[in-house]
Image (cartoon, rainbow, N blue to C red; front, side):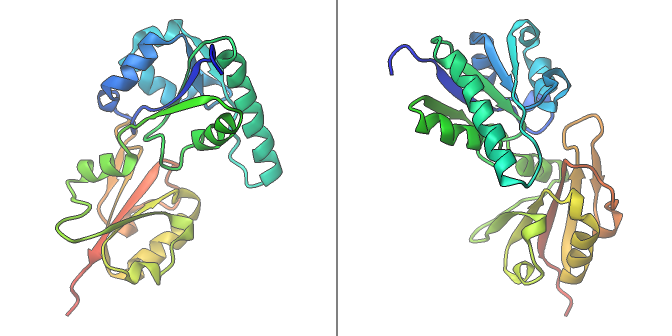
Length: 233
């Protein structure tokens, strides 16, 4: 429908404000409505990253979008529809909305749920990639994720099994924090070379070079890289 604004899903990178893209900075500067996935937007990591790179963000109209971290499907669907409806109010006024999110907008990102609803309702959505957390973590660790004909796998730690770890290639395990003791035990049995980064690119960043070094109570933003199986012959 003509006259509607565009909804932009924008990844702001993993934590270091220097890693936000020029396109993300441009969109934040050029648009007045910035949506943030948090009840208290100015406390969110995505907001802090963006504000460090674009100080004038503080002068924009900030729209909090509540995205609960729960498993109840009905509650999630209700929250997603409420969030999409909120953005649509601005889009119907002909105003663009820039939804900022940590990391890359296409990798385990809450915006994807809003995107589905917005597009169903006939709105235009554009995605702007950001530096993914696993690329930033690999760079911070000085590791290559894949070389030559090698492969690498990105998966939630809670859905990864010991059998999966028998596959060739490097594994990137995300969302590991709530299952860390079990994940560590599985990794130690796998014989793989394990490294991890907690809060990559942030002031609280911590690096671990072995599975046993990773605290059982490590934070939500913990990412594990399990390299090829070590030669035990």
